[in-house]
Amino acid sequence: MQPTSTQHLRLAAAHLRAGSVIAHATEGVWGLACNPFDAAAVRRVLALKSRPVEKGMILICASLEQVMPLLEPLSADERERITTPAKGPVTWLVPCRPGVPALLRGHHSTLAIRITRHEQSRALIEQCGLPLVSTSANPAGRPPALTALRVRQYFRDSIDYLLPGQLGGAAGPSEIRRLQDGAVQRAGS
Image (cartoon, rainbow, N blue to C red; front, side):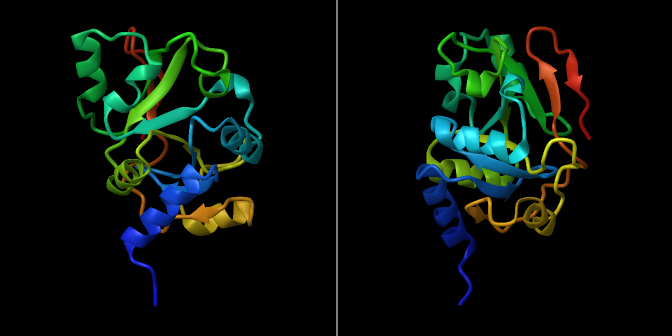
C-alpha cells in the first residue's frame, strides 16, 4: 500500500526535526531542505552542493512571523513588501540580527527569506513547525534539478528522504531582491 501525501509530509517533517536532509519540490525547482537551527544539517547541505558558506542560505517560511526572531525590526512598509504576493517567487535579502549564524547568512548582514506560496512546501513547514533551509537541489555549477529523477542522479543515497511532489509552475529559481532598495540580485523566472 502506497503512503498518502499526509503520511509523506509527516515522514519528511520527522526527518527534518531529526537533523536529516531531504529533497522537496518548490515553486520552480527541486530543493534540498534541512532544519536551519541544526548546524550539522546545514553543513551537510553545503557539502552536498559544494556551496561555500560565504554565500549564505535561503530560508523558506509559511509566514513572516516564523523568521521575525532572526531579523532586525521591520517597518510596516517593509513587512508589506515582503508579504505581498508577486507574479513569481521572490526571496528577500533582509537585515538580520547580529546573532544569526554565518552558516545561514554567509558573510552578509542580511538573511535570504522567502514566504513560499508552494502549497506542499507550506504544508511541510507547518508540519515541522519551523522555517526551513531550502536551496536548489544541484551541485555547484550544475543546473537545478527539475525532476525527482535528476535529484536522485545528482545525490544518489546522500539525501535522507525525497518527498514526492510537483513543482509549482515557476520556470526556475526565485528572484532575489534586496529589501532596502528593491534591487534585483538574481533575476527570477
